[in-house]
Length: 195
Length: 143
Image (tube, rainbow over all chains, first blue to last red; front, side):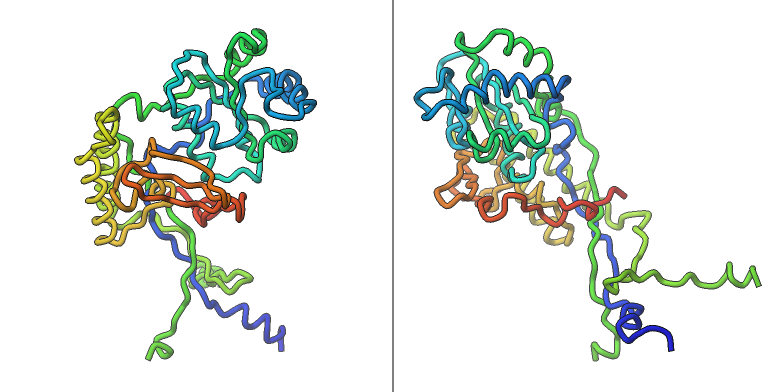
């Protein structure tokens, strides 16, 4: 006698692994959706020292020294309306942290690209959300770059963050079919049981 | 003796959950259906882009391509990933690149409102870390 009934039960397969072919979005390429940040630690340090530390001492939104938005609805409203000013905006996003919904993040790059003003999308490093929690629930911060914002900060961000690119939107080019295999299981039904 | 062991059938692999492990297939059956769906989606994207400034997002051709794509996927039983399906309005078959409204509602759900008035709601407040089955690590593989 070798092994218990449980171990014997494990040796009999109840389900079978199957691979279902599925079509992926030809335009979604997560690696290129978010602009690359060249010097991530420097940018994060600048954001902390120039913005977050100052915001921590302020009681209400009226006291903010710059025009900035932290609520998702306010940010969307700002980006989708033409306000008549040509000031560029920076959108800082904690996209690598758990706790920020994926569906919400998927909307952001295209929203920024479609905005009437120039938007610099800046992804922040992992665990940046902890510093953002007091300011924004989902780790979003939109800053309008007018005269009140430090020029050095602006030049550093401009230098280190790549512009937003959507190659599939700017040029017509056929993308090859992205068929993936979805790993899942199905029950093994014996013929005698079926009858 | 050694020869016998080589020619004999390999023992099926069963994991701890009683699942018979099978290697992924080398080829995908009915690839032409996927090519067709992909082509229709890209045609629709092109038409949407061409008519980006149209009044009230009037893109009849783009919508028709997506409608065909949806019908073909159902008839041929080919699956689309949620990342693809989330970009399509179920009611009017528009591409939701620039939705009419995008907001987090009072109950904490993300609402994507299409030009036709249809709303896609994602309950992000319930579980912020929610991932669909295909988004979870290891479930989706490249053939």
